[in-house]
Image 1: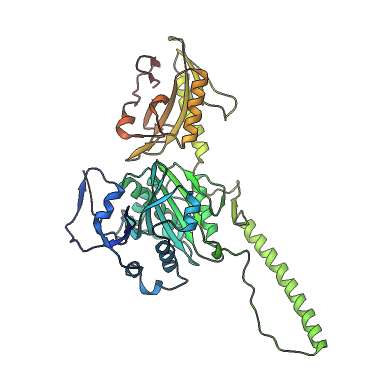
Image 2: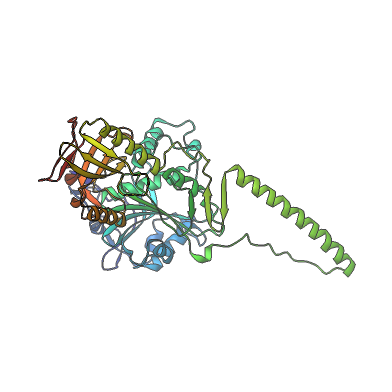
Amino acid sequence: MIIISLLPTTGMTVDLNNKIYVPGDKGSSNFLKTPKLSWEEIVEHYTPAEGIEDWQKLVSKRHWKKGYSAYETAASWYNANPDLPQEIQALFGDSAELLIATPEHATPLPGGKTSSKSDVLAFIRMEDNVCALAVEGKMDESFGPTVGEWLKNASAGKIERLKYISKKLGLRYPPADKIRYQLLHRTAAAVIEAERFNADCAAVVIHSFAPNQEAFRDYGVFLGLFGVRSIQMQKLYDSDKAGISLSFGWASPKQSIVASDATAVTKTTTLPFKAQSITVAIGLIAILALVIFVVVFVRQTSLSKNKIVQDGEITVAENVDVDKEKSDDEQGKTFESYVENLLANRENVKLLKPSNKYDYPDFEMEILSENQRIFLECKWRNSFYKGRYNVIKGREKLQKYKEYQKAHGHPFFIVLGVGGTEEKPDYLYAIPLEKLPETKLNYEQLMSYIQKATGYCSYNSATNTLTIR
């Protein structure tokens, strides 16, 4: 039984009839008690709003000013209602539609009373999937302290919280000192709310209204934790480290992005021609010297950070140890080696691995005692997802697997490792491809394919089940 109170969450929402709602006073004892939640149930806890002033009530007065992130975010989302803001729509595609948008949404975290408060928590539908979207509005402010700064003289509560966040996101503890802590807990909030309301996926978007986009650098370093090495604005990046399809994006209205710093305009007085010439010459020399200094300084700064920033794109150099994390590809290869070693110890198995890493599948094996050839594709996930579990990332990939099976005519299994490490997962599953009409399975479906330590390998053609552990 899940017992969740939505009352501590301040904010508004949009229902399917495109009406905007804000929280009503329903009493502190009004808890939502149900074994299964859905995003639709949030609507029951809100009352109609009469205007953007209702959003204003949720924000401190000093932040409710034009040019402040809280104000700009509110104006952007409220004015777009019932649609998504244009730059958010462009990020997720034309088919994405807004279901609910709740501002100042508080997501509780362990290790203290302070919640992770998203500027907007939205649920959006993309084709058949519902995605929980945590939005962080930004103007000129930074993402706050780094992990190193935040952990300095850390209390037991802080350590507990960061360990929880790291585990929730599938990251090793502690993350690199240079990572901005706000990005970690905001991403954890998206995953938590996706699990809480049984969404199919989670996403975090930085909704930036800043003219210089300086915080984009820190965002790029953060995405390095998830194996992303080169990033651009207005583009989504995906990861499944958290055991759920997780996307990241940076969205900015076109008018907030400028190509260079604004040039200061100074008032001048009229001088005689000769004096003007001397003044112009001195000015040109000074400007040239300043330009050379700035170019050298920027170049040295950029090299020292091992980053290249150009045309709204950041490339994190390959030799930068952004974190102790392995990339998704490295984890996948490690898990493949685990499966390979597991099957190599089976006397009745002949195992072949494609020489081309882009070939499907990862392995082709033959069970000699049964004269049966079988294809295996290996996947490892850090943890279980409480809703529908993301077995394969993307319908296009699932379709390629099915086309391969059809072309070759042999059984095809997804070998899924969950928990523990990629070198030694806690759980192992062998899922027949034909049992995957889509990319996800719920927990009960997954349990029917669990592998127990039998010490032998066999295939049952009548039930299409495979034993490899």
